[in-house]
Image (cartoon, rainbow over all chains, first blue to last red; front, side, top):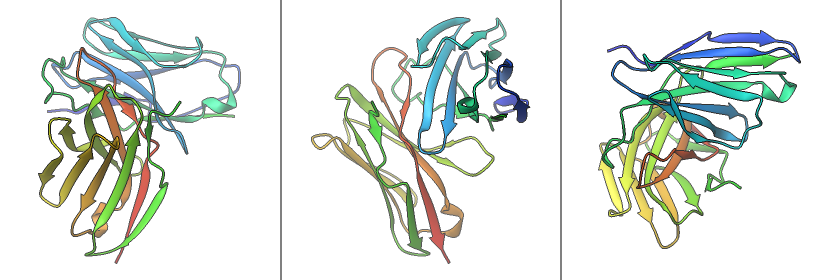
Length: 116
Length: 113
């Protein structure tokens, strides 16, 4: 089956602009999480959506927002971009976690955002 | 506050030897732990996991050990192969609800042929 698809793969933006990243989860997966990866910081959790509802949110400023559509596809938006927002943004999808064994998240390849 | 810590940013191991990657956590509510492997330009892929009811889980060349009292887990790779060269992330979550994974900062493993 198709994996998690993130578009675009690469993006260059200038400071002050806004950006929208897209994530299509694995078919049948209803949960989508977003992470920011920067050198030395590992994967920092941004937010998680399940059935169009935000269920968890990480410690990021309000410039970072997201949403999930009825087909489980998700977008994240970053407004007023700063140089420090340059990072790899990863999306992960999973089935509803009803059992302890069902906790693996499947990641997309990420969107590499460069802010200049 | 980094709740999951991987204190070694990098590790080099000779091919055929054992690779040991370490991870410490501070949140006592964590009781499910996972290791992910990440190649450049790819997303992380799930490797192996362990529940707090166990202290060891093995899958082929990969074994994860959990020491709950020390809040420490480790990933052993035996024997190490060149294809194991990647960044390894440990992650943890509580066992209730639909809680998010908390990741460590990663350890870059290089296997020397």
